[in-house]
Length: 198
View (cartoon, rainbow, N blue to C red):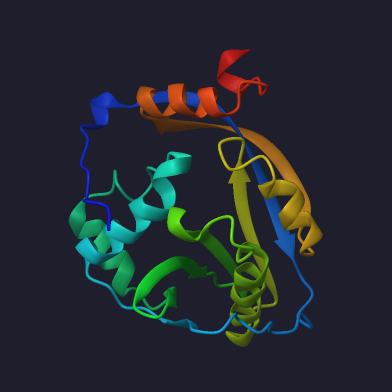
Protein backbone atom coordinates (compact mmCIF):
# COMPACT_ATOMS: atom_id res chain seq x y z
CA UNK A 1 0.00 0.00 0.00
CA UNK A 2 1.17 3.51 -0.74
CA UNK A 3 2.56 5.62 2.09
CA UNK A 4 0.61 8.71 3.07
CA UNK A 5 2.19 11.78 1.49
CA UNK A 6 1.73 15.25 2.88
CA UNK A 7 2.58 18.38 0.93
CA UNK A 8 2.54 22.02 1.93
CA UNK A 9 -0.31 23.88 0.22
CA UNK A 10 2.33 26.25 -1.12
CA UNK A 11 3.67 23.42 -3.30
CA UNK A 12 0.46 23.27 -5.33
CA UNK A 13 -0.25 25.17 -8.51
CA UNK A 14 -3.82 26.47 -8.78
CA UNK A 15 -4.95 26.16 -12.37
CA UNK A 16 -8.20 26.40 -14.39
CA UNK A 17 -9.65 22.93 -14.96
CA UNK A 18 -12.61 21.96 -17.13
CA UNK A 19 -15.09 20.06 -14.96
CA UNK A 20 -18.07 18.00 -16.14
CA UNK A 21 -21.17 17.46 -13.98
CA UNK A 22 -23.32 14.41 -14.73
CA UNK A 23 -26.57 12.97 -13.39
CA UNK A 24 -28.12 9.49 -13.34
CA UNK A 25 -31.83 9.04 -12.65
CA UNK A 26 -32.66 5.46 -13.69
CA UNK A 27 -33.38 3.66 -10.43
CA UNK A 28 -34.13 0.45 -12.36
CA UNK A 29 -30.40 -0.17 -12.82
CA UNK A 30 -29.76 -3.78 -11.87
CA UNK A 31 -27.06 -5.04 -9.56
CA UNK A 32 -24.31 -6.76 -11.55
CA UNK A 33 -22.49 -9.86 -10.40
CA UNK A 34 -19.01 -9.04 -9.19
CA UNK A 35 -16.29 -11.44 -10.31
CA UNK A 36 -15.48 -14.35 -7.99
CA UNK A 37 -13.59 -13.46 -4.79
CA UNK A 38 -14.55 -9.76 -4.93
CA UNK A 39 -16.51 -8.21 -2.07
CA UNK A 40 -18.24 -4.81 -1.87
CA UNK A 41 -19.01 -3.69 1.66
CA UNK A 42 -19.43 -0.67 3.93
CA UNK A 43 -16.20 0.82 5.21
CA UNK A 44 -15.53 2.88 8.36
CA UNK A 45 -11.84 3.79 8.23
CA UNK A 46 -9.68 5.96 10.43
CA UNK A 47 -8.30 9.11 8.80
CA UNK A 48 -4.98 7.38 8.11
CA UNK A 49 -6.65 4.29 6.63
CA UNK A 50 -8.83 6.49 4.45
CA UNK A 51 -5.94 8.59 3.16
CA UNK A 52 -3.89 5.53 2.22
CA UNK A 53 -6.67 4.24 -0.03
CA UNK A 54 -7.54 7.73 -1.29
CA UNK A 55 -3.98 8.28 -2.43
CA UNK A 56 -3.58 4.78 -3.85
CA UNK A 57 -6.62 5.34 -6.07
CA UNK A 58 -6.29 9.06 -6.70
CA UNK A 59 -2.57 9.72 -7.12
CA UNK A 60 -2.54 8.83 -10.86
CA UNK A 61 -5.20 11.54 -11.39
CA UNK A 62 -3.83 14.22 -9.10
CA UNK A 63 -6.57 14.04 -6.44
CA UNK A 64 -5.96 16.66 -3.76
CA UNK A 65 -9.33 17.42 -2.16
CA UNK A 66 -8.96 15.27 0.94
CA UNK A 67 -5.19 15.62 1.25
CA UNK A 68 -5.49 19.37 1.76
CA UNK A 69 -8.23 19.11 4.41
CA UNK A 70 -7.34 19.60 8.05
CA UNK A 71 -7.28 16.31 9.95
CA UNK A 72 -10.06 17.44 12.28
CA UNK A 73 -12.27 18.41 9.34
CA UNK A 74 -11.67 15.12 7.55
CA UNK A 75 -12.35 13.12 10.70
CA UNK A 76 -15.65 14.95 11.17
CA UNK A 77 -16.61 14.34 7.54
CA UNK A 78 -15.90 10.62 7.76
CA UNK A 79 -18.13 10.39 10.84
CA UNK A 80 -21.00 12.46 9.43
CA UNK A 81 -24.41 10.82 9.00
CA UNK A 82 -24.71 12.02 5.41
CA UNK A 83 -21.37 10.49 4.47
CA UNK A 84 -20.83 6.86 3.39
CA UNK A 85 -17.90 4.80 2.17
CA UNK A 86 -17.74 1.37 0.54
CA UNK A 87 -14.68 -0.71 -0.20
CA UNK A 88 -14.11 -3.13 -3.04
CA UNK A 89 -11.79 -5.97 -2.05
CA UNK A 90 -10.32 -8.94 -3.84
CA UNK A 91 -9.68 -11.57 -1.17
CA UNK A 92 -7.62 -9.52 1.32
CA UNK A 93 -6.47 -6.84 -1.17
CA UNK A 94 -8.10 -3.44 -1.57
CA UNK A 95 -9.21 -3.03 -5.19
CA UNK A 96 -11.06 0.29 -4.97
CA UNK A 97 -13.51 2.46 -3.06
CA UNK A 98 -16.48 4.76 -3.49
CA UNK A 99 -17.41 7.78 -1.38
CA UNK A 100 -20.97 9.12 -1.18
CA UNK A 101 -22.51 12.31 0.15
CA UNK A 102 -26.26 12.18 0.81
CA UNK A 103 -27.85 15.56 0.06
CA UNK A 104 -31.13 16.90 1.56
CA UNK A 105 -32.94 16.73 -1.80
CA UNK A 106 -32.45 12.92 -1.83
CA UNK A 107 -29.71 13.23 -4.41
CA UNK A 108 -26.61 11.18 -3.72
CA UNK A 109 -23.28 12.42 -4.93
CA UNK A 110 -20.51 10.01 -5.83
CA UNK A 111 -17.71 12.23 -4.59
CA UNK A 112 -14.87 9.82 -5.28
CA UNK A 113 -14.81 6.51 -7.12
CA UNK A 114 -11.99 4.43 -8.49
CA UNK A 115 -9.74 1.41 -8.53
CA UNK A 116 -6.20 1.02 -7.28
CA UNK A 117 -3.57 0.83 -10.03
CA UNK A 118 -3.13 -2.91 -9.44
CA UNK A 119 -6.77 -3.51 -10.42
CA UNK A 120 -7.16 -1.15 -13.37
CA UNK A 121 -7.24 -2.61 -16.86
CA UNK A 122 -8.94 -5.80 -15.65
CA UNK A 123 -12.44 -4.99 -16.87
CA UNK A 124 -13.67 -4.10 -13.36
CA UNK A 125 -14.53 -0.44 -13.92
CA UNK A 126 -17.98 -0.91 -15.45
CA UNK A 127 -19.22 -3.54 -13.00
CA UNK A 128 -17.82 -1.60 -10.05
CA UNK A 129 -19.49 1.65 -11.15
CA UNK A 130 -22.80 -0.14 -11.72
CA UNK A 131 -22.53 -1.65 -8.23
CA UNK A 132 -21.95 1.85 -6.82
CA UNK A 133 -24.98 3.24 -8.66
CA UNK A 134 -27.27 0.48 -7.38
CA UNK A 135 -26.00 0.98 -3.83
CA UNK A 136 -26.86 4.68 -4.08
CA UNK A 137 -30.44 3.88 -5.10
CA UNK A 138 -30.68 1.41 -2.22
CA UNK A 139 -30.10 4.44 0.00
CA UNK A 140 -33.36 5.89 -1.39
CA UNK A 141 -31.68 8.28 -3.79
CA UNK A 142 -33.93 9.95 -6.35
CA UNK A 143 -30.91 10.65 -8.51
CA UNK A 144 -27.18 10.10 -8.45
CA UNK A 145 -24.66 12.65 -9.62
CA UNK A 146 -20.93 13.04 -9.91
CA UNK A 147 -18.34 15.23 -11.51
CA UNK A 148 -15.21 14.43 -13.42
CA UNK A 149 -12.61 16.61 -15.07
CA UNK A 150 -10.04 16.74 -17.84
CA UNK A 151 -7.44 15.11 -15.57
CA UNK A 152 -9.46 11.93 -15.29
CA UNK A 153 -8.73 9.20 -17.82
CA UNK A 154 -9.84 10.36 -21.31
CA UNK A 155 -12.31 7.46 -21.45
CA UNK A 156 -13.99 8.40 -18.15
CA UNK A 157 -16.58 10.86 -19.50
CA UNK A 158 -17.80 8.68 -22.40
CA UNK A 159 -17.87 5.65 -20.09
CA UNK A 160 -20.06 7.50 -17.56
CA UNK A 161 -22.41 8.46 -20.37
CA UNK A 162 -22.59 4.86 -21.59
CA UNK A 163 -23.60 3.88 -18.04
CA UNK A 164 -26.62 6.20 -18.17
CA UNK A 165 -25.22 9.46 -16.82
CA UNK A 166 -26.23 12.57 -18.75
CA UNK A 167 -24.10 15.67 -18.92
CA UNK A 168 -25.67 18.56 -17.01
CA UNK A 169 -23.04 21.24 -17.41
CA UNK A 170 -19.41 22.06 -17.97
CA UNK A 171 -17.57 24.74 -16.06
CA UNK A 172 -14.07 25.94 -15.34
CA UNK A 173 -12.94 25.52 -11.72
CA UNK A 174 -9.72 26.58 -10.08
CA UNK A 175 -8.06 23.48 -8.62
CA UNK A 176 -4.71 22.74 -6.91
CA UNK A 177 -2.28 20.30 -8.54
CA UNK A 178 1.33 19.44 -7.95
CA UNK A 179 3.54 20.63 -10.85
CA UNK A 180 5.16 17.18 -10.95
CA UNK A 181 1.73 15.60 -11.53
CA UNK A 182 0.90 18.03 -14.35
CA UNK A 183 4.19 17.25 -16.07
CA UNK A 184 3.70 13.47 -15.79
CA UNK A 185 0.05 13.58 -16.91
CA UNK A 186 1.03 15.64 -19.96
CA UNK A 187 3.70 13.07 -20.76
CA UNK A 188 1.04 10.32 -20.71
CA UNK A 189 -1.44 12.27 -22.85
CA UNK A 190 0.57 14.64 -25.07
CA UNK A 191 -2.26 14.86 -27.62
CA UNK A 192 -4.53 16.70 -25.15
CA UNK A 193 -4.41 20.48 -24.81
CA UNK A 194 -5.50 21.20 -21.25
CA UNK A 195 -7.38 24.32 -20.23
CA UNK A 196 -4.48 25.74 -18.24
CA UNK A 197 -2.27 25.55 -21.35
CA UNK A 198 -4.56 27.70 -23.51
